[in-house]
Image (cartoon, rainbow, N blue to C red; front, side, top):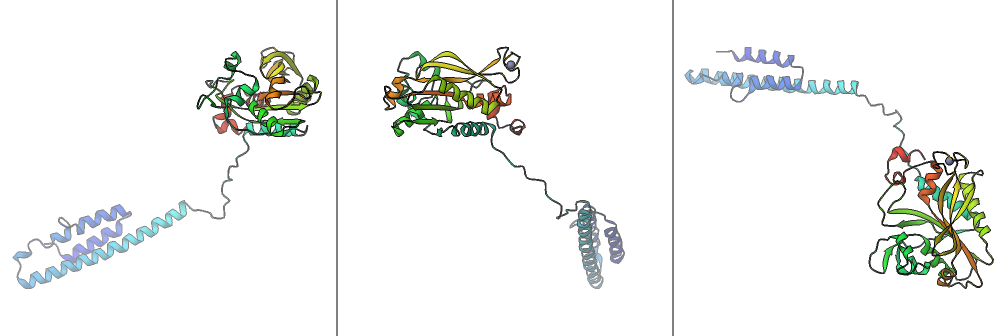
Length: 340
Ligand SMILES: [Zn+2]
């Protein structure tokens, strides 16, 4: 039979050798395990002993248990302390070290371009006018001379809430709201805002996009005034060397109507890959306000006349930054957005 004090000495030596908590646990199970622990086994055969011997062995075993438990607990604290000390050594945190700089966001490229356009036109005396994105058919179409059944309505294939209510397909309804509100010309406004059309997203069109339209109503305005305004805006935005040209077109709300183009910034109008060898890039539409539209805005076309233009902000930003896919503006990809 093993002597309890010899077993205790053996256990204490094993505890001293344990280098990790796991090793220590293994020692604990070996000596103090409930059934097969070596200390419990000391009691095997206790029944064959006389009462005095029995009491002496029981006492000695309890003593051994307590001593081993104490040694285990002391070693456990020792190991934990040295583990923390190692951690402090290897993963030291220098609290005086400056943290990594916080990433700062910036204004989205479309907002930048819109604000530039607003600033340029405000310097000419135009005021920003905003309007609702949910419109009635009358404001979105009828008032702009796009009557029911007019084939031009197909140009503005829209999202409807009801037969009467829709998401505006252009910012032109704001012109009508402005004329009805201001009543007395002169009126010089620009109307930046979001528009919606039933188009599948492609490189050059989106179901939602932003426009800026301009409207001037005054006495004796000429097409030269319109073209001068466009030229000033384009040169302020893209550079003094850029030129503007107009081509006859059709819009129900202007008469006459034109598309306006800007000379290619890469080839200077000579023709290159960027402008598909045309020398010109399409920007938007413009024209003299149709007398019926003035009338719908409560303005007497025999006293006043006007001009208007409109273009997409995405298109302007694409031309400014040489972006070839409109969808990039809305994909929130930082690799793209961080460039502006
Ligand atoms: Zn070119």
